[in-house]
Length: 135
Image 1 (cartoon, helix red, strand yellow):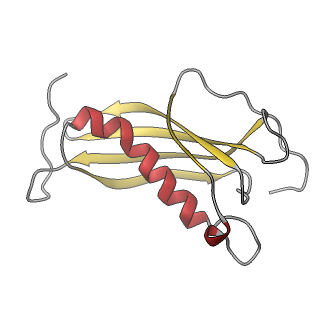
Image 2 (tube, rainbow, N blue to C red):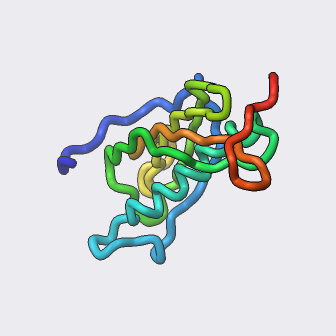
Image 3 (cartoon, rainbow, N blue to C red):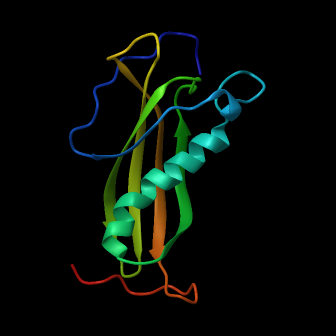
């Protein structure tokens, strides 16, 4: 990551806003930025919203296919998580999640800080894969 000012991003209109959250000081690493693991956990939550609707029951994260940290996340950023389903299989659903930060000192402008692709699988009560309901 460079120290150059990141480009201002336009929020996506082709994805659904599924989560907004503000990281707090307890979520920081030793450098004063937000832990990557904290961001990953939030992305997993955001990524599960659309598959949960489609699966109509239990599901589990089975793969993090891609995860790119584009810019650091800072205390007080207002993070917006946008998601879209990119693939539906027999038992699994793959989603793309994009995370945009509205910096506390630059309200109204956004930068993309993270993007990821995750796969979830519908599971039964025993934790075994189950066929997704017809839509």
